Image (cartoon, rainbow, N blue to C red; front, side, top):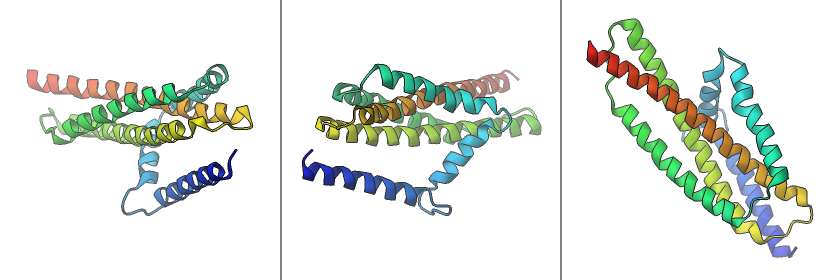
Amino acid sequence: MEIIKIIGISLIGLSTFLMLICLLRKRESFFNLRGVITAHLGLFKNCKIQYFIFYGIPLLFASGLAMVYEAGETFFSSLIIIVSILISMLLAILSILTTKDYVSAKNQQQHAKVRQVVGETITAIIFSVVLCIFLLLYGLIMVIIGDINFDINMVKKILAGVSYYSFTVILLNLLLIVKRISRIIDNALDANQD
């Protein structure tokens, strides 16, 4: 590998590491990525098996997929398009959820439950958007460094596995978001019938 490419990959790695350190600080005033992740993981505090379903099984799936299929430039280009569409969709849903008035609940307890579900849905959407942005940047980097021949074939498999894992987690979170939005819609329909 040429020395210039080694320096370039080193700078990409260093800047990614520094960005993560800055974004994951405890009291980040600009963007609290740590708070987003903590809030999202808090959604499963009452059902610990969900951690395995949402994060363990995708790891097994991504590992197996990385062993079978080596992602190339076409895969990452398609992934960038899909993730861009997902970001647009998630932000549109977020804007709808945040502008809707939820005071039509029958009683105080139902109003509190609706607010909780809306809050959890917004948390899941924000977490998914963060993952989509990560995957978008990751895909762009993988397209750019796709020509580089790594001496170890396992490096390519690990790099592909990270994208498979992230995408699988995003898809599972989309299922969570759809379920929660359906509960919000059901509640709105029940309130309109009364």
